[in-house]
Length: 289
Image 1 (cartoon, one colour):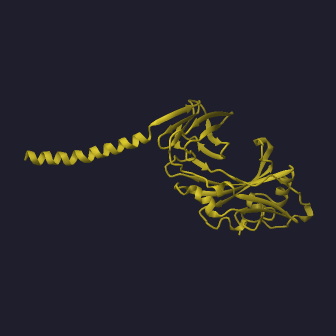
Image 2: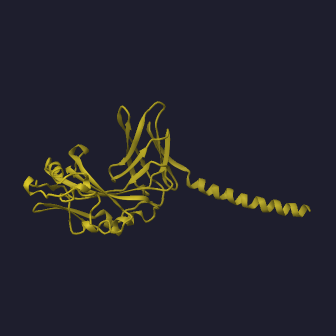
Image 3: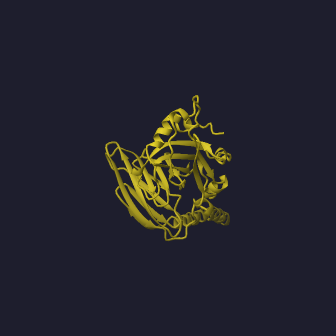
């Protein structure tokens, strides 16, 4: 009987011990190597990833905090529905130094905080950009009364950045700006409009392979041809950016990530005479075919 009890006890203890051992290895992976912080943002670099905690202090009415990596072009937007929100930052690469700016949108004010850290350990990058991604090309072309956007990039080139990530709710965002991007600040351009497409559709780039007329299809950007022409005419140049926006299954609700953009050159915009603008009926957004 005693032998039976001892056997039963061993049977119960062994799985528990193995489970604890497993938890121990996970904890080791989450060991914090380096921490940097400001009033509203804390970055913990662990052995396996980079975790960011955003906080709002008691009494603060903060709606949103955007975490911007200006050098590498990523954006994380967080709806501050809780006093503290923690998430894994998927853009970290081993051996790189990062400077992140927390853009804090409160009810009565706006402020910024900056933190700098280096990823010293050999973690696996969740989001990684191939050389083809880095050298992808967008062209803006004037042809008679057409203003074409041409995306010379394969779908697989863009989607390859997310091969290791189980991204969800992925959207392709095509943004048009009036102004300049090269060696410029945010004040040097204004957003003219955005087209938002379902990135799970592998044919999403097809309408842009041979040139897509943004004036004829201005309703895709929520504008009329005349409105878009006027907006783009307000500055000497314009440019386009293609980005993928997504969520991650393990991230809290309200955390949205946007990967590094693919940019066109700053291109001189030639205004179209009013009488030469296309006369179109109201088109539904997303009618790119």
